[in-house]
Amino acid sequence: MIYYVEDDGGIRQLVVYTLNNSGFEAVGFEDGAGLFAALKEEKPELILLDLMLPGEDGISILKHLRADGQTAGIPVIILTAKNGEYDKVVGLDQGADDYVTKPFGMMELLSRIRAVLRRSGAGSVAASSKIRIGGILLDDEAHEVFVLEKRVDLTLKEYQLLKLLMENKNKVLTRDIILEKVWGYNFDGETRTADVHVRTLRAKLGQEGNLIETVRGVGYRIGETV
Image (tube, rainbow, N blue to C red):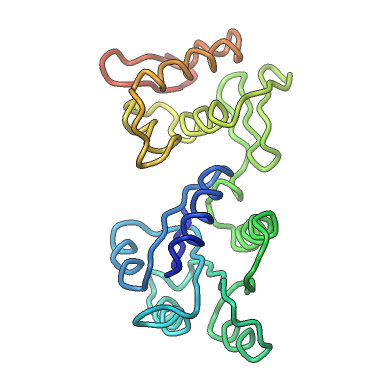
């Protein structure tokens, strides 16, 4: 999970949308209050933080994060229009892991995020190890799937669906949870969308598709014994 604090709604929505469609989970907040409320519920693998915010500014937020033992170890990347050397030094001295100036390209941002996660060893999608269940191997860093050592081409949604199931091995995921995690919190489609994608995913996985079990009336799960 990645949290992004940015008061500009357009920028925030673009970054969150891009992250959620690049193998990450991301949620945005317009100020520090929203961030700290969310931190009480779930700790992210990384925080993207703007400096110029309403209320408490980014540097103050960063100081509070580093002073709290519960959040001190969370990697933080500053995203800001303030590109002076002094501002960079202040941010890094206060404990930021990286500093990206606006305007920035999304490919560059994704690369910087992956680099910070690798350095920190955070358990995010980008920094996770390969996942193997039965004859299925998912290499998330390379964004590739192999079935019985042969590469299988999946659509983005099929890939995200398989990854979600494999990361939750032997856990039953309801259709609503699948729709929320793969298609987004505001997805208004019918639950049969999940069923259709499970069906096409099973077909592409061949005999290993049988590892995906339908739990009647609930949803789906994957495991080596089903």
